[in-house]
Length: 491
Image 1: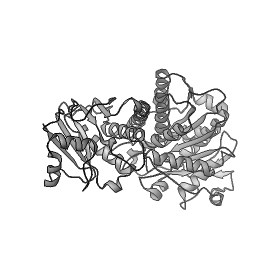
Image 2: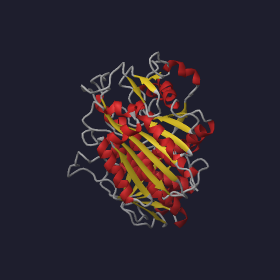
Image 3: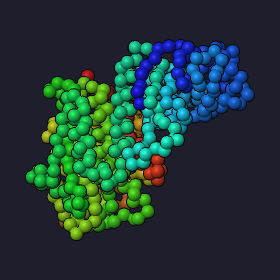
Image 4: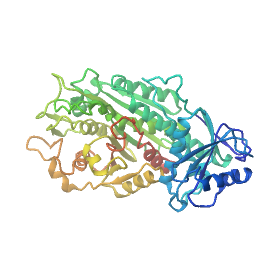
């Protein structure tokens, strides 16, 4: 979608569809008032008659409004003005975007972000509106071609604003690019999105953007490094694993990089500890941590942030086979720690622990890993929040604040050493599961054993990475949280 700014009166602007917002039982303001004045009070009369609903997310499409150059006016309900916070604003923009995606128009001019939202400035409102409209406009087509009579997504969206908002425009476009990349990778079927496919995609990013490079480690490279945990997960699959290392140099060489590590289990059968049949198709989403860190990398590169970033993806497939690792096996990680396997379906933490150990070589300012790690996280937080776990309080505060700013919210869970006792094993340095109690937290504690004194956080996105039963597809989260965190750190 082509995204531009246009600084012109909404009543004079030539567009296929002008998008304005109205609050419930409140005076019209901004573009809505301008349209109402130009049309001799038409908007107010239609609200009073009930033909225009002002409930949050309600939509009404008007044709040929007197005094307005636009062919159509889409009026979007914003609900109560005093409750119109950043979350409701995002949902309102999404509602407008979904309406436009399903309509025949392929071009629109959006003014929703001219309404006040908390104490947030015009740059924030514009950026968030761009992200929401683009997210709503996304349609998966990689393996399902649209029908000839299907409405086409928006080809062009213009947003009200002048040159002072150019920086916000570029950030919004970069975020939209990152979200789209993450969603597309997450939605691809596992016969296409293999570890090798993720590696090729990463190579494409490095080719498309300046200051970027990529290294792809194959099985023999990982074996030389002693990555016994990651390799154990992949040894039952015909699709060999990859460790993908993307680098972006947007700051001086003296600046320590931030490192994002993504779980890229491109399909998870559970291995020998086989998952139930129902819902197993959703396990194509088990690489959404990798998709998110790749999407974040692309967003950062698109924005040209003044920061150094390394993204490490542990790409692997967990399959049952005569060569597959087994419950009862003891494997040795890259860090030299031994792990007793009780459940081969707790594979993500095994792939991640070696990737985390590898990441230490970059002497990072911080390491953040992202993973659809535990079903226990879905039980704890549902599908609304990413679980944030770290033993560094200020890092937790920074990540939660970034999620709030990006409307991609996180919630901190404890990572106390008290939980470590659940990982004790008589046969190895640790076991790979800690039992049912606090399953998401003990998974975080497992990873913490490989991080020592590193400034590190673990994000469990099992509930946030895709919606419901998977039919709505990948969300792209937490691209917004991660990108905002890096924007806040950039020089």
